[in-house]
Every structure is written in C-alpha cells, then in structure tokens.
Length: 61
Ligand code: SF4
Ligand code: SF4
Image (cartoon, rainbow, N blue to C red; front, side, top):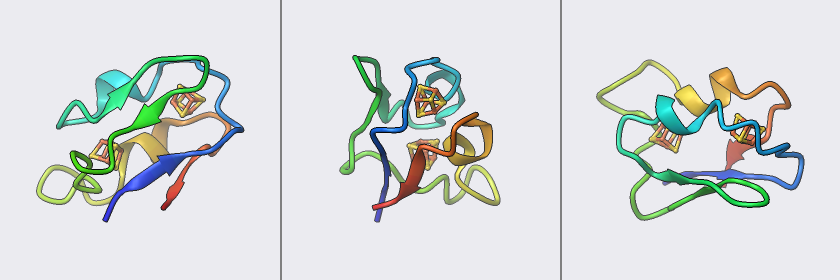
C-alpha cells in the first residue's frame, strides 16, 4: 500500500524531507513512488506527508 499525491499539489516541497524512506520526488507536482512508500509504518503513527501537506494532496492510493 502507498499514498499518492493528487493534482491539488502546489509543489511546496514540505513533504519531501519528511518522508522516512525517500519515496517522494519533486516535479511540477510531487510524486510518491508507490513501491517505496510504506505509509510510514514503523516510523510514524500516521502518514507524515499527509500530516504536513498544506493542501491535503497526499491521499490513500
Ligand atoms: S506515507 Fe510516509 S512513507 Fe509514504 S510517501 Fe508519505 S511520508 Fe513517505
Ligand atoms: S506537501 Fe503537499 S503541496 Fe507540498 S509538495 Fe508535498 S504534496 Fe505537494
């Protein structure tokens, strides 16, 4: 399972350094590598990217 970043992303970059497994890459909108994302299991109680995103663009895939 993984999260995905929706078109609502405004490319602020806040999520990328928060990801414990470096699953997020930058672009016109940011992208989560579904093979790498572990939904923060073992690192945080809930997906950190979703927690920090100001526009709620990190959603369950
Ligand atoms: S849910 Fe966690 S592991 Fe997955 S992309 Fe977001 S911060 Fe990274
Ligand atoms: S925190 Fe949200 S708006 Fe900012 S780059 Fe990540 S997904 Fe996009």
